[in-house]
Amino acid sequence: MRSNGDGARALREQLGGRLPNGLGALEDHELADLASAIEVARRAQADDLERAIERSLRKIPFPLRGRARKAVFG
Amino acid sequence: LSVERLEARSELRRLARVLQKDESRLEHLERLDAATIRRLRERVTDELFDADARVMRRVAASSRHLPVGLVATLAQHAFGPLLAARIAALIEPDRAADIAARLPAGFNAEVAAELDPRRASELIARIPLPMTVQIAGDLARNGEHVAMGRLASALSDEALGTVLANLTDADILKIAFVSDDKHRLDDLAVLVGEDRLPGLTQAALDYDLWDEALLLLHHLGEERRAQLAAVAAELPGAFDALVAAAEREGVLDEVLPYVPKPSRSSA
Image (cartoon, rainbow over all chains, first blue to last red; front, side, top):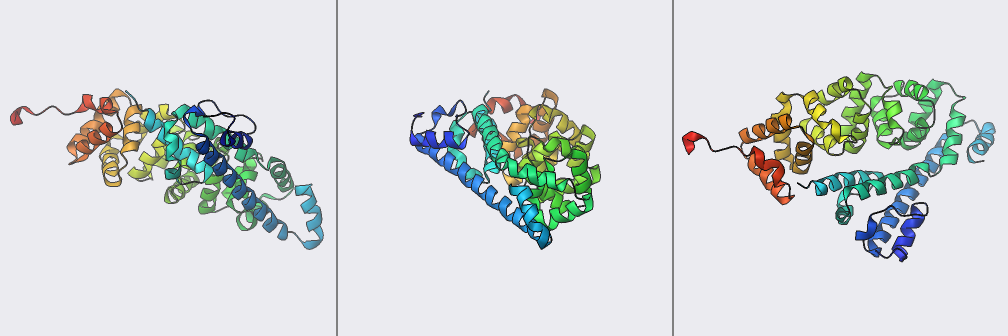
């Protein structure tokens, strides 16, 4: 594993700045695949959560919805 | 003896669940040792479950002002399982358990599958046993054995025994394979009872669950290993399949001590 390859860099980015020990057996393109899998999972989760929050806000009476949205998203 | 590949495969199955990916797409990671895959899974778990934490905390805080019944209705009809699971992990466990008690087991099972594994045990331990049994049944039907492995570690021996009594033999093998605390598997085998050993062995044979059976065998104590091997020797085809799987995985030494000796009459 090249710790400064594009794949390693992408994975480091997905994992908050540092790689766990022991990934030396992986090629850089495999690290890139892993980084991509994490990013896809993160996006899917964020989309699901956003849709769920929007669905929930729609259940709140319209006059209060703005305040509720602000309470959640700031 | 080396069960490293089996342990790595167990960890891969758990990582695949966190990433919502088919396990076969991660097969190349089998080159890593189990401890590395576990560290990777833990880091990915941290990243995914801590993402959106600020918004999730605000949603959870907002829900605190609402009556339990209303939150339960919202959870089922608006939040959906993922958001409900995130909120459940951020509110007081007693309140989360009160909300769960007002929801159908099927929905709770979907929530249980999405719970933050780092916080799930506090909540699961508060769910009444009859509902836990129902949730476990639904999780098994949904193929959520990884979530069940986490759930199992939060249960007392008594509760776990009741849950397992209501699951199929194949489910038990699959749960044991991804169990959080494999040191408990020998006790689990006692809970399951000797009379289910033929069923467990048959399930390994019928559904090709030899990875699961071999890892279970590895974590059993001497007495239970001998019992399981004796049962396999009695089932047509089972012992040969067990030995073949052990050879393929390089763990033949785990099984060889239990190969039945030829009987005197056939000698």
